[in-house]
Image 1 (tube, rainbow, N blue to C red):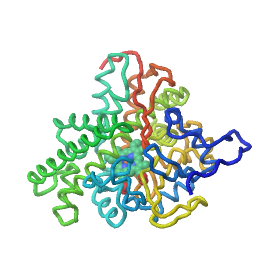
Image 2: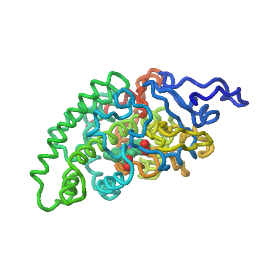
Image 3: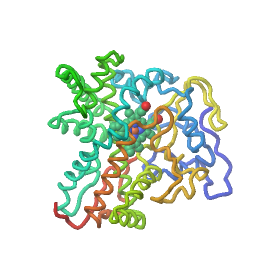
Image 4: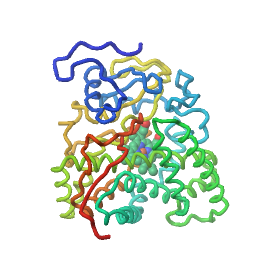
Length: 431
Ligand code: HEM
């Protein structure tokens, strides 16, 4: 029941054997391989680089259904292979259990309870109040490199912006935010490589969060101040009998950081790259911004998420009983990975799916997932993405790539899709 047999050559251009997945070439441009899978093996069992076997779901309709299917659990205890317990597979292991008991690894009713507690912090209104701070952070980062005429947009811009934004939201004091930036940097740099660096950073973050929660609990005022930070809000909830343990509060802070950080880095990175390599679309957006029209910015960021979004594969799901996905039987205990990047280019759902059209209207992409685990931070991600791209294009209007696209390197991680560096040039601007 493992790899599906190689199908006979098809009539169209997508013939040939099963394409090789998870190579460097694949990381640079996975879309032709995904087109092949969608066409010939839409629910495809494969061996991942970690050695784990999992089903890849690539068609939009199957993807949407799978993401919302309660028979697919997020709890790694349902995985039939004990390998994940060794922590070597990328599936959350028992060793990190404390921080890993978070929204993306649990099912209802715990998921419902924890998500309700934190969702107040992410309403569009709460997030809109945060807009001036995101603009201030964005301008501050651009000020640091604008006069130089060149920059690596990943390290100098896309990377620090979300980490500072989430730290502010959580209530991590400004003087500690650079430590967070360093740990998060370790977590990104060591992905796909030795896991020791990641484990060390996670440990430091865990220690820091436990101490911060303890300190905030001691200093918590009797009444919430307007705009109270998220960690204080979580402590208040747990103190008022909402059944949130201190460990759950730490895991929540961790998942917000983890889920909201690299994703947003890659929205800004992949989005800027797509704009710089599609000059007509970029001119169109610059024209709209110059005319004070925000509509194209809003549809444009959604289109960038569809076209080359940060989350290539949704996180792990495990069949709790035999299920049939797209006509393929999946056994209980099997891991299932929904390939959002493939679903969002499905010609059955999107007209001209390989074309970047910033004004695309019918664009119900899956870049933020679907169902009960739909991205909690989507309003914040939209705010950050829109602010970052609009400010970059307005303040550095002749922004251009400093290297050929073929020279760029993509990170090789399983879930996320993003660039290692994005060297750019522009006419030096006054700050
Ligand atoms: C462009 C940026 C972002 C993208 C593309 C993105 C994408 C996603 C996706 C696809 C999921 C669902 C994963 C699955 O079902 O397997 C998800 C869940 C989640 N995201 Fe985001 N995300 C982004 C930014 C953020 C931000 C800024 C935050 C918070 C600060 C955040 C917090 C979360 C949380 C907490 C979950 C888990 C929700 C749950 O399980 O109920 N995300 N995100």
